Image 1 (cartoon, helix red, strand yellow):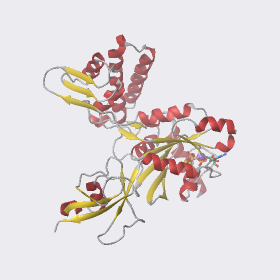
Image 2 (tube, rainbow, N blue to C red):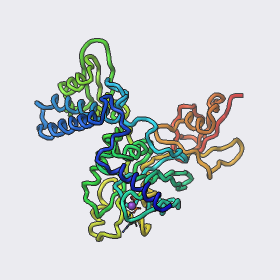
Image 3 (cartoon, rainbow, N blue to C red):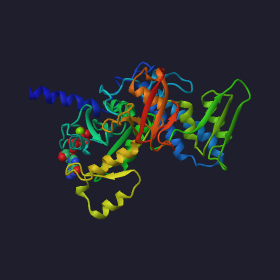
Image 4 (cartoon, protein in one colour):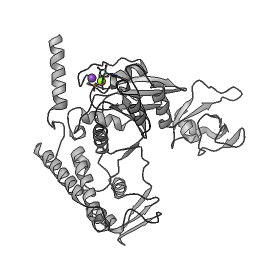
Length: 408
Ligand SMILES: Nc1nc2c(ncn2[C@@H]2O[C@H](COP(=O)(O)OP(=O)(O)OP(=O)(O)O)[C@@H](O)[C@H]2O)c(=O)[nH]1
Ligand SMILES: [K+]
Ligand SMILES: [Mg+2]
């Protein structure tokens, strides 16, 4: 019995760490050498970009390289995605772990092996996830729940990942696909390990179309039949110039389009908009094992943006971590008030910022509710009067109280 369990572990770990296991990556080019050549081309372009000085004269060339890179990365991840701009890219669907989304929001732990992800899940949620001193202890996704301020937060412990995860190293793709489904990513770091680990994990996520702590760029991209490429920006001295925009568009065989940037974006943002299928997810760096460092070192870490120092083992600052997660999730709790009764403060309807209209609220209560909706009475931060009569498009705020009035 023990022998088989050990054998299974060995097999799984081999599949995670073996130098580039592409067996599950289907590439149009009959064998794994197809992937190898794509990876080589990616590397060549990255090298060329590193060699190229950034200035006005090179901006078009760099733009073209960035577009080429995005296309190659898409080919590597989703070979069935087709070649044109938009569509494809990012994560192939259904690639993540088969764990149901429950609760109001999902938070995933991503990090190198043995940084303490499982210890953290166990201490935070009370759901046991095996922790041990050897790498790749966790081989699958373990969900746990934290109840916080009336909301139910699902935390996911995930297997450790290493460099190259997104390109098909065993379970790495599954881990990152699952990360794409999260409302918040916790990159768990071991404070004793090199800082470069942070950048490696970020790169793995970015290569899979995940953008961390960033808003979706407000770039309007309108294809048209003729008239060439036009570009305008609200920025006084935009980082992007028309030559670069033209070069990127040419790479996607787009000859006619109007592009409008509502802020000062860079060429990577434009490539993201053309590629599509990017997800914008907030991220906290949970720096674990702070029991192993000095107070001075801790003070430095504490000041870095998006950092949350913790010690999972001794349960230090886990409250601080949950509080920070809550803040980053930016959820909107709405209390329902049945007519003539007090509001139910125990079970808020939890909505996400950007999807928190009265209509979203109705849809969360019942899928047909909006059909009989007449108006709503709202008490709270989002209104001036108490109560105020509002329509279905009204945007709710945290801790509003809502009473729905139906058509008769
Ligand atoms: N000193 C110290 N050790 C910790 C802390 N948290 C976890 N550990 C230890 O670090 C080792 C790895 O912990 P795990 O929870 O298994 O790490 P993991 O990230 O889940 O590892 P994998 O599943 O292998 O990816 C264990 O020996 C833990 O006891 C901590 O806060 N301080
Ligand atoms: K471990
Ligand atoms: Mg683990």
